[in-house]
Length: 258
Ligand code: IP8
Figure 1 (cartoon, protein in one colour):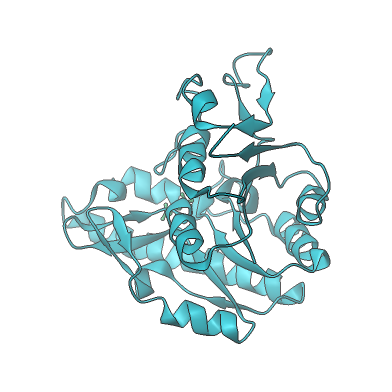
Figure 2 (tube, protein in one colour):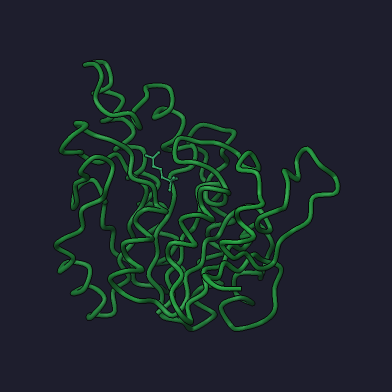
């Protein structure tokens, strides 16, 4: 099984509040289907989640009553996005089911607690693809918080031991410096913990759950012997399909050892 996260920067237009990239998502779902691989899918929130969350500081937990209606709106908005994702997957011939993080799980001081994964296991046994997503989630210590799709990926990787983990984003991979500022920025095709120590953490685009640097750190955490975590650009037609079918593609592979 291959665990895939379709990032918010690909499935939505992050510069426009609640704009879904329907064509792009439809293409990516077809590429997944064409690959013939068994997959489990997580998606990000993009402009359906980050805009209001940032405006109301939802990532910092409960501070005031006015956040409650923002919490409800973000919860609704990411479910709206999830339903559109589910429809595209069905249209591509993949049988998905929505597993909303905030309705099924809780956090404890920002840590996602997934101690009952029976529901996910049973779907997988039946050949149904559970689709989880970055969500607003209750938190035992902080009242509530934001659970990123990246955090969900980490848990699913621990529980289901996928053969590969793929993060689909709108960048070719990790660069040695910010490519938006520096013309000489070079793509790093293979990242190890040693290489990571030399990369400035500002080479990111920040949203409420971090940027590329934070993502690579999460990915390093998810690597195990023989399992690569790969960051690939989903805005380039066919790249995800090529990666899934074992072809050489432009991407960043994250490995525990050099
Ligand atoms: O887009 C964030 O999930 P991500 C979830 O995977 C919300 O980081 C609600 C902002």
